[in-house]
Amino acid sequence: MAEITLYDVNKFLDNFKVKASIFGIKFRNDRGKNIDTLFRLGISAKIRERIVLSLEDVDYCDGPILDTLNKGADMWVFGKDYSGCELYIKISLGEEGEKTICISFHEAERPLNYPFKPK
Image (cartoon, rainbow, N blue to C red; front, side, top):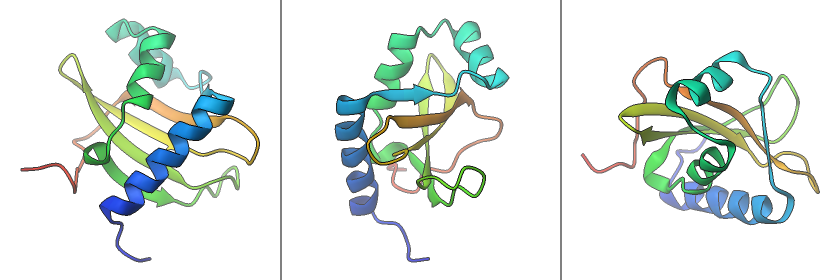
């Protein structure tokens, strides 16, 4: 796979945000650690959506990752600080004509690597 560039990340984020503005975001609320993080940090559904839509190229950590489980669109990983807690956020464009997907939204289980964040 070719090395990911800032252009690639920005193109994905632009596509994600445009599609989310049309179809919305489906959040995986069936995953315990996602819900636990929301409760523990007091993050409402509106704040969670705002955080996801505020992602920038410097928040990029990994991807695109092939979705072998659901055979859907590639997944991209981002990190974001919220009240001193590093969040692990994995998102996907989802299927054509349907909502974008936020697969993971929880406290990072290990430090994340940000290749485009200034040192």
